Image (cartoon, rainbow, N blue to C red; front, side, top):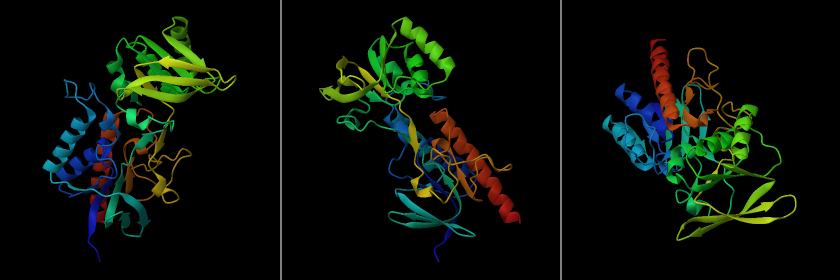
Amino acid sequence: MKKIIKILIIGAGPAGYTASIYLSRANLKPILITGKYDGGQIIKSNNIENWPGEYKKINGFKLMNNIKKQSLNFKTKIINDKIININIKNNYFKIIGKYNNYLTKTLIIATGSIPKTLGLINEKKLYGKGISTCSICDGYLYKNKTVAVIGGGNTAIEESLFLSKIVKKIYLIHRRKKLTAEKILLNKLYIKIKQKKIIFYKNYIIKKINKKNNILDNIYILSTKNNNLKKIKINGLFILIGYKPNTKIFLKKINLDKNGYIIINKNKKYKSMTNIKGIFAAGDVTNNNYKQAIIASASGCIAAIEVQKYLQKKNNN
């Protein structure tokens, strides 16, 4: 039978790598499976100014590379594989990868979430070249410039308000008549609309995204009421239509909420544990409203500490 390891981590973003650092320092010899994106969603951010200790601007790729080096320095075993299924056994978990299978006593799921996309031509090509899904990460790149925000929920309105302090003008585009954000946010938004800092296009969808010299140049928006087509020249486009968690392989195996996020905080002793004893979750794969890398990192730390306590108690029984 294949050797059963103590702890396996799935996911190589801030949560997964932070968990690996703490567990490796505790000499628990974790194995971290990177998945498709080594570094997570944060590697798409060009400039990060709010990571503690990094007083100079740093891009997401370099930041995650530094964190990875720190993990490797503590002898974490990192494997480039993609997990495609899990089997829950009585005394261990069988984790099935694309290239290898793994048997583990405990598991930390840190597979994160990904922003929803519009599915338009040029969209994927222009991420990091005018298109973003995070105003806090990339907003300052568009200081005194013109941007568009797509969405109508809390995230879209919050980030529009944040951007309004930085950019020259914002086109807020929403496919419906009514915005779904909280009233307190809407009140602040309407003030910005009256000031003409934000121009609101309701009942509009993006029809086309155009580039020039491989950089975002303009968009065409289409009215869902009268088919009116408008061209808007912009420097930046923030697509904020929600997130979807990477939890497909855990469906019907671990308790998920209605949006597919892993449910934690039900166990009194282990706040990061799922409904399955020995399986923990951290980062944006749980229903974290803040969607900040530092919070994902902190939750990875919490999961690592709780896994240590869980294993210690299990060994003492």
